[in-house]
Image (tube, rainbow, N blue to C red; front, side, top):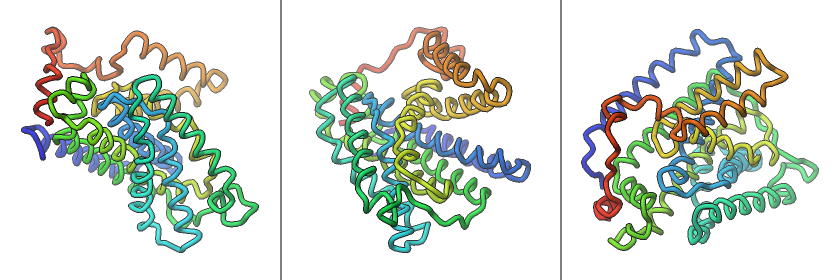
Length: 327
């Protein structure tokens, strides 16, 4: 299942250490910053999941808000209509999003710009259905959203968001170290060559896409009770997908740390702009993103490469060799 990767245990160890350090923050943070941290955890988790299919496999999806919204609505319906306990809704919402993602599989016949537009069109179609389908849009026929019980504290959601993020990131590390990760890298480099040496590209793309849908579904189920009220406008919003893409590209698309660095950096910039330049908030946020993408296409990750590697020209492993290993 796994190719030789001696660094996996070390990476998981660093992840656990970072989680232990973050677990101490609620002791010193006030409720505002604790609540903000929950949003940051969710956004990093969403971006990291999107990065599996959009960055590692090279199939940029513009429809991933569907899986977040589906998870939120699944959790709300199970809780309000059927009385499911909150903990049970998290895995069920992830499962629902993963199964629903299989409906997108015919879109993998397309690539690049066409794939992105197709996923966007599919997302808009699903949102339109949710807006008009009375049974799913609220408990009463007159409702346009779901009111959920507000029983847990902000600190509870902080630790839940942190735990889910750590599990999400750990699962991505394991995926990268597995045969699936090797196959995705081969597909990204040259899908035709990968297929020619025996890699089942359709299967691995399906695994990556389903994986990248499950975690948004789980975070969506958490987001509903955290926000207390959800509607199609709040959880199927295209901006959710755009944030996943921007965080990944800003930090370094296709890299493990990219979405994490992008999420932390952009969240900090966003808060500073709100606090000190309210009238120019959107302009500053946009300008920073444009400058990074224009002058540093590799994102923040390109700034922290080890000097020894930066000085030498890159010698990537040929796609044919990587594809043969994955096969």
